[in-house]
Image 1 (cartoon, rainbow, N blue to C red):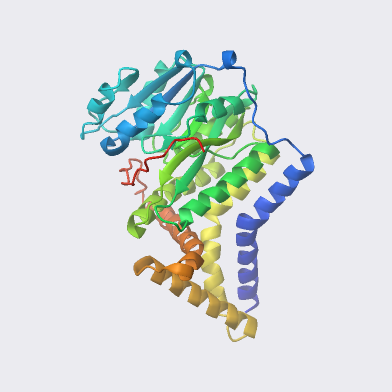
Image 2: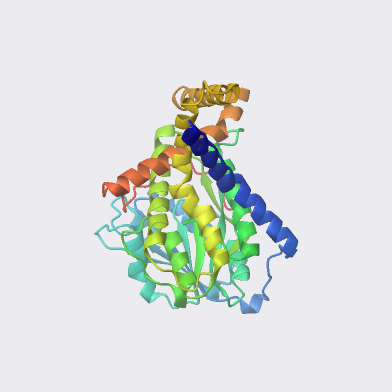
Length: 394
């Protein structure tokens, strides 16, 4: 019984530290340093040259809107190139790109995944920076300016954009709340030392620093950023350099996507233990272990240990009996929310717990897929609803 008590409280501590303790400590450290949160503004004549690189596989449903959004971005036209890679697309995506004279198309019939498509064309980039964006992510019109402003410091090798997910209803979903939480952490990390990773929907890399990563990498955006860190550079964060996506409301599709994301997180976390990282300071290691490693390899199993150990302690003390009863009610509520749907106050109450449980189940399944050698490198796009006002400045 003593072992179960230790297991329970250690698991609670690790979960609490990962999702609450680390952000609070980080915010306090930043506050003590009293760093300014303002974004640098470059004189208009000094903007660096940029290639906006969009990888698109069978994205004809949203590709026209994406390209129109890209052409409307507020950046000097003589310093911006827009490239689209449509390798393997069979739905007419290449033909859509050809309709835009100012956009350069790269296409080959064979499909080998997003990372291969990106790394195939990178050697042809001649601009100072390359900005990566997904075909289904619309951008705020000043996003490139904000990215380049944040990357003005020569110690910055990568700049992470801000991912925003919006709900199709008046109730914000779990993914929407999660990315808001993630944005806070990234902003604090950027002011403390360095952001620990980027979201593939929008991030920028100094072209000279781009290092090809293993083509079986699932979270390519994460590993590309870490490769720049190994060269002695930092990852900055650009608040307001926003990409916009519609939240997936279908539970099955949402779980499928979370498994894909989780598999990449687990894969990258495992690789941290197997390869020595050059130029990684203790500060950055603390950030990565707290933000990435604990979430992917520890927290999901702590959640499982909390439930199982509590089950074995329910007759020891009323506290354990009540905590187990609350857990059972919570998981039953999450199950009902997933399979039957809820509304009103109950729905709002269960949104975050449902997403939290979904994310951790996805981590466990992602690890299992990797162990079995079934972690998918090639990903099929998940259909989303496109909002008409995406990309407009607020």
